[in-house]
Image 1 (tube, rainbow, N blue to C red):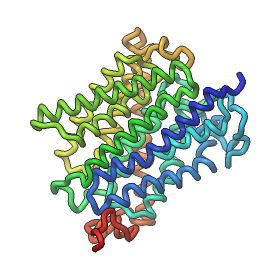
Image 2: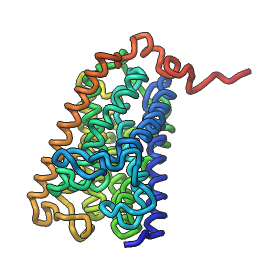
Image 3: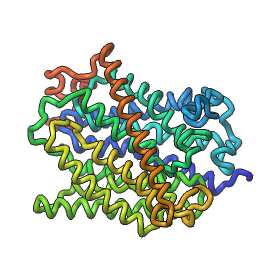
Length: 413
């Protein structure tokens, strides 16, 4: 097929939509943390975006989407430094858009995924080891997993595993890695004390930007302006709405009143959950995915709050649990009628329980690999460059310690 101007236009727009999600995540996380860490949280997201952009261009893209080596574990270095990635299509992945555009679209996924992890240790990690960790994590965790599931010849893809837009590649890897990071880095000095978001409007703003960008995240993954993209857009909205409302009702029932922050977190849980399924399930089942995500993630977050685990912003409960549930739900509710070109399986409700078991297997493999790999990476980095800030630095806040800046200055007279 020839390049298609409509598909190119849509994927360019989707690429821009996904890019805006990273600063949106910065505002979402920044509003949730203490005031003394607001600037550093947003800046960490932007720094990660820049660093991963460079890594993706030089060696990440070819590791994820180059021809398979090592039995489908990783891509070779055919596209190292974007060699051969230009205006013509890479027919393996899309015949109607330039390979360079496919690279750019996938870059945005690679950049936001490690930024999700920082919510687990907000306000208690040094900047230098953080950036070292991010480069190591994308190289040894994200790039291989992306190849397993999305790369031509990837071993899980060859088995028939489906992940439309990143339930495993993005949310499961980030969520379980956040769990490992919280264990390695340890509890903050203020753990157990009451902590309220420093800026609820920032949380709402960040949620709105994330929701807006998620249309590019999911619908853009069709890589074409077609009916699959339309379906993904619709189910993305419905699942987010269902999760936000179900989270709100849970809070209302348990705590006596809903909260703006809780509802926003619920929206994000629904968006994470529908991500792997968005190209394979219809509107009706997207509502089921959203409701279960809202209730389930709420319960996991409530359980975590009763433990001694300091996953500060509940990255595991939101992205880890949401992404894993959405991947399993794909095995339950997928329909070839929704996506006959990419969808190779019907879900269990349409007569193929083996597909659901395959999806569960993939979740277990990816979660284990990401958790163990992250734990090892952090332990090694900590040996050479201590991860944790000092008690004095943590109490002062990373805005001042790392950047010498504050989010809010007193009004001058």
